[in-house]
Length: 266
Image 1 (cartoon, rainbow, N blue to C red):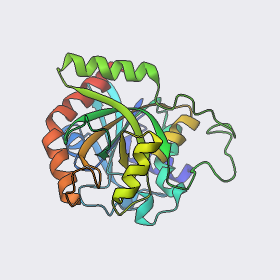
Image 2 (cartoon, rainbow, N blue to C red):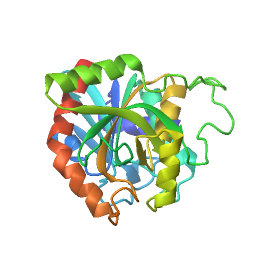
Image 3 (cartoon, rainbow, N blue to C red):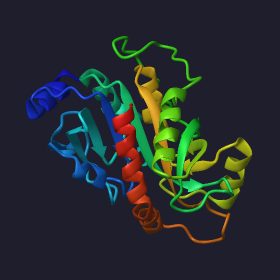
Image 4 (tube, rainbow, N blue to C red):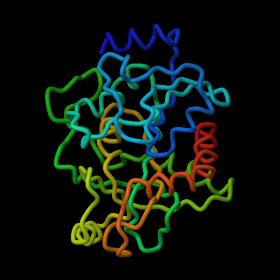
């Protein structure tokens, strides 16, 4: 960790970000719009290269509307073969850098029948169905306590701010529960039925480990999903990653506007 922090500080002149943003599939352009310093993951001790199409794999530092921000231009996924502690390592780095707020974004399959492709959904809660917990292992008391409460992973005050930002921009912001599966395959129709019965509104392959660790570290979390498609079995259509990218592209304008307003407001 010390090696990681020292390296980042050497590249950013000891930049102290208050807000971190994890940019999901197709959403990395936001970091290009606001970039003071960009460091490829492959150069950062403890980080790994991002292998998913649509993820540039850079840590981007910027001052946006007077707010100091660090952005993950692409994330690490458990399905890439990374151990779970590697997946969440950037969040622990954010804690050490001084981050107080984390905005997590993703592309997700819609379960709620009222959702449409390119809708944005405010994450109100999550279900961890990845069969792995990023908090397992020796506890680092400098990061958080051994048995963290998860009653309010996605802070209600930040949710209210996000809703007000969406209302100001005349963006319809859905609300719902996000369920994380491991991937990389899309869910089967039977699994979609199971997810529905368990109470999820959207399903994806990320976000939950990062949100859990951020909450554990005392970082306030707000999460937004871009609904990229209806989950398997709902429409009968074959799912593809290209469809995910296209839906993210269609939502990009309003998503970037919402992210900017959110950064300004928290």
